[in-house]
Image (cartoon, rainbow, N blue to C red; front, top):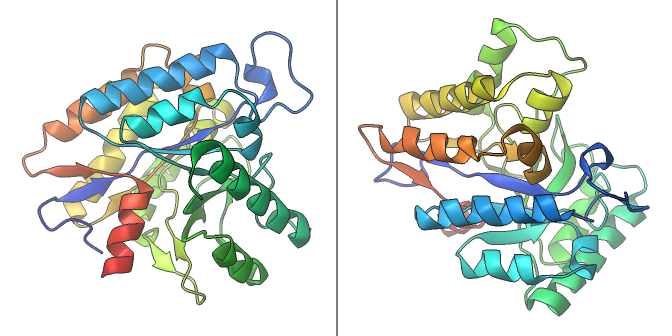
Length: 280
């Protein structure tokens, strides 16, 4: 599916704004996810500003519990042209057997969006990502649609059961982009899969370095560009990057790499993708 007739491929950088306990500086809250420390808040501002100055919009997913803190950060990101959507209330998995809790988490978070940011979220990132997306839990489709959710980003097929990796695994991670493109569930709900490795898997599970991470993202861009008409959409986390990439080398490297391509590469948000797909 070509997302822009004038672009060779499309890149959507999606950031899950959450806080794992091991990364939290200072006293760790009882419920860590969503309680961002000052280092991560500042890092999120920095990456948003770098992208905005380059004219590149990015997608941010936040937890409902984040909206019970100071919401100035999210207003600022929106003002810069970035998209902000939801990630459940406290990082509860969408494919959990406790369907009632899933539905309530999404509902409460959407109401907090309306109260604190002035709009209902159209998108929902599935915490953790799932190999089959939401294919295994169709019972939640109507509830998501009733809440105003138009698209989800939940399918992730490259997490793996262990920290082992080799050249074949790396190649499979970016070649899988071809098969992980936006699709609709039977209900009409749009899925925008997570492609390539996530930064969590690359740094925290496999223990790899920043140079290797940037090279992986470049290989993913190369694959989407060479095939043409593909979307590359990785899952990124400000708390992971703040620890492993304090100098914001990743964003700067990706923007520069895409700019050197002979044909144009489009950067957009998941909201942009959803709007284009639904209009087609």
